[in-house]
Image (cartoon, rainbow, N blue to C red; front, side, top):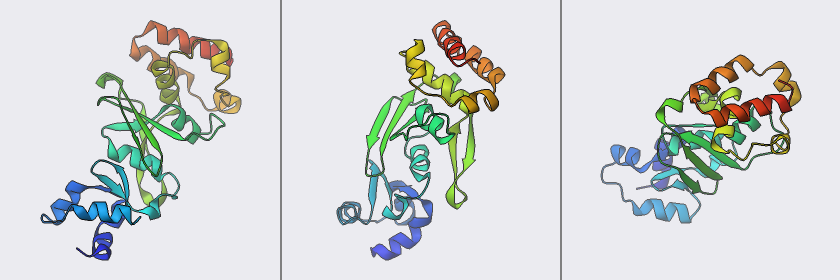
Length: 205
């Protein structure tokens, strides 16, 4: 198999699985994946999933990969909050929510963490358009906050919540507090309800 022919066929996918390759070329030599990865012609995202190095620096493609390599999932928690500008720091890890088992993958693009929740809690995310017209599944700001407080119960003090440095302008002007309350109720978790109320008190919501 000629690499240029392979790249011409697979490049526009952004990232791809080996099964997509086999569907195109049933007799494809899987040793090509190893050779081309060693040469830097491919990036291995996780077992059976690859991308091309040209995508590594493209805006938001790291989030696109998060959706693709472990499904169903949506990007949430700190990385979603950073996407909306609600927290100030650049977030290296990409944390997603999934109904599959908890997992993590580290590759040349970044560190991917997947937190498992019950299927009833897989809501509150939308498709956001990124570069090249692709879309990513991303938690709403309200759901990202709820997921954060649910998955990380150590945010149970005023100081811990202040350390998040949530953006006051966003909280006061753009955050839908009624939606926040609705999502909290759907979790049916008293400890979460207390943490959400503490967050609202800490930030004057």
